[in-house]
Image 1: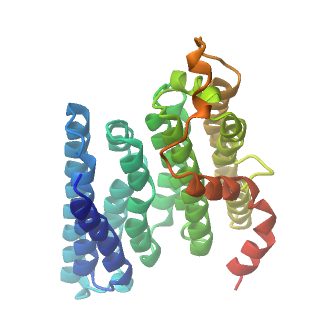
Image 2: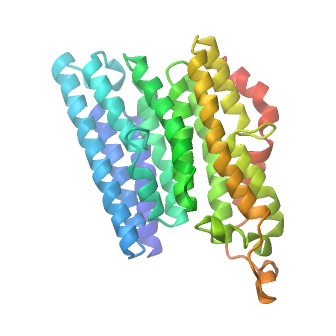
Image 3: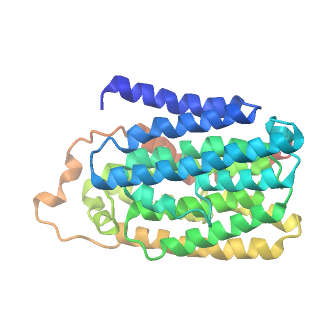
Length: 348
């Protein structure tokens, strides 16, 4: 892709998210979300491959549906209450519709089925943008509206953690596994959204760091399915040693970074008297942990048959920048000791 066009599209992505962040009017927020969608579509379809075009079409249709629903709900709110302000949502009908529209935007269960299919059709770089940056604007809106009916958010959260765990069990494609991982993590964030918005933000940032690390590892190894992971020991031996820890951090095992948000969320849910919800969420995390362990096993404990030339690619220079990978991998593995500082910030 022409670098000028790429720069313009990335600028459009940044501008769309910023407009949604800064808006207090529903029309402006909707416009920011539309800019976001339109800016990523050429990036998704840049490889003229039937699968990429199919993924782009599915993404466009789901995002257009969600945007139309959002516009309809905000117009309904203006008709019922005379308010266009995002923080002045009082009527339960438009609030529920907008929550559903934003759930469709980010891919929460039960409106999640587009996400694995779309992610499977993209290359890892665009998939990374879709899994991280594209979640920011809808989350900013979810944090600003206070849903009248808290049951709907808990239902979305539990459904997402369960679907994210069950869905990933039978997958062999890495991008689909990462999509189900994304659904499960979003479920954890939605569960706690109404009780502690700041904890949702901490979980979102932690998820971004861990997902960035995982995508960059797969990109360095040029791996798209589980079998291709078996050759990674010959390409990057040290990274292959660290990657299982990155995957277990995504699964939320102590003493890795991913344990921190899950621990704080379970603690907050128990404080709110939602012990059964916390138990179900913790049990569903075990499902996710199984497929992360499966990836770890495929990467470190299996070897693909190699001829002599296949065992020496690590001697070659990588074209990919390894500094971002080193920074996010370190953050994924070693941020648990800052938990007291995070708790202090949350209680400010």
